[in-house]
Image (cartoon, rainbow, N blue to C red):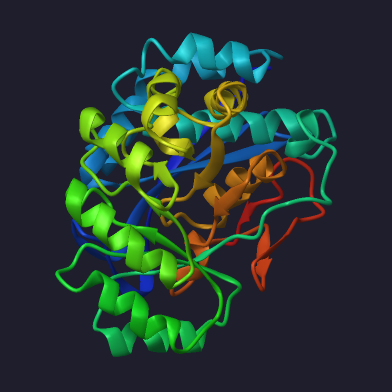
Length: 339
């Protein structure tokens, strides 16, 4: 029996405008992919992201272009399907991610298993998810922290008063702080900021320099007083080895790398290279987040707060309780659409 593939566009209004060093988002556009045989349905997700040239039109065209391959995937293992699709979608790994995750979810349900059980039986030592505070007026950033008490915060920076922001936020919480500059700093800014941020008990700095600033990043690895984690510099499996030379760790995003299948390989490679491993989200609904947290048992850090930033979620699945990941009791990723 052939599989059926469908995709649907949703608009996800955010609770607060979400600002990084690059742009502000108030509504997140996303595509939900479903793959079904009539008995079981798997779900995956890919969002619009201007930095990575992801648009609704591009996602829909990409999914449509490989529909025959997916619909004829009879009892194919997820890794095999990824290998069939990757050459066709080499310019759209966001779409590849949505399909790969949907198929993994479907495959796990068919096998009557949770998704994470394919690679881990350890639910005991799972990192807590951070909660992200976007760039805003300091008083508004404080208010977001007060509204959502949390053990770990990721703080977006890229202003002309970044250390002052962290200093003010530190006055109202003793939670762990992680900093994400989204490519906004120079080498000297990073070195100087790191000294002051360490005093403010920051754990690490994520992607301070532009993605292709490899030579400059090497200086930071040698001289910065805080660990430096790659995000924009680490997109696909091929980037992991290069990142090991100039970063202390990597942040894997399922959409950047093309789904769970390559993410698992990236984690394995990173461990061989003694890198710290984080995985993050891109303001998805609980469909994307529930897929993401399936690799949480393999990670040092995770950023899985995307659905918490939404005014209203279109799905249900995993939940976060005080930073702790609470898995669904349903097989697969545990996620399903509410509408």
